Length: 327
Ligand SMILES: [Zn+2]
Image (cartoon, rainbow, N blue to C red):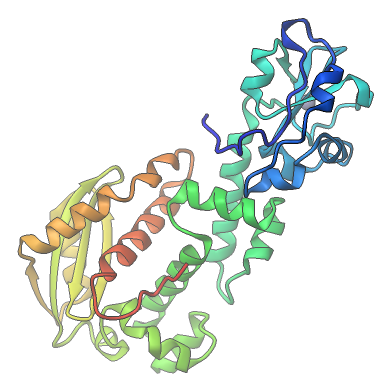
């Protein structure tokens, strides 16, 4: 897999194919300046050795280490017994270690496990954000996944195409749409969906729902809704808009059933197929959603929600009101 590695984030030893110890020359070279990113934390061999000694999982994405006496390379968090410092060299990634003639450790599988760790971190954090109540903070999510905040944010965004903050906002908006129809009052629905205050909510209401909460509760009564659909890697997407914004994004296997679902959702609205403009904007927005292709291994429900959120944000930007998902 391709990894975004800050150039020179981990200085390689020089074992070449003969697995030789790093020479005095490499030791004397100036330390590389790590770019912004997780590499900064493990920017020199002392820091890397410290991470290995403490089996720091956060370092697994940043470098791997090899043992000259065994010819094996491992992730920093590997549970194997540590070699002597003098016999340990560092590589920026598994490919570099293999080019130098080292074999992957069978215990920590550094050649396979990193992608799994990223996927696992994204899925775990999404499930936390989907739970009812206040959304967890970035720090909470990072701690739950064992990554640094910066690194977690980068991994999440690269695998889903949206930021954790956007994903959390999408979860909360989903809850709101679910609870409004059955709630006694709009205020009750707001609190049940996890919003802090009604003032905060009313500022966002039209962006999140594409109409006033009252109209939403009344099955879209009196609201003009237009829709367009397009094929995407997840199937067929239908986007419905009102003069106030995006009111629905649906994903399924065919356009007809999606239109029916939209009709069921807003039976009181004036529902019409959009002119070509919305279809073109939808197609353009889907073109821009390329990062989602990187999310292989991420469950479909997460990818769908992320794509929906991305579309709401992308299509909402052309509207004269602030986006619901800053950041
Ligand atoms: Zn290992």
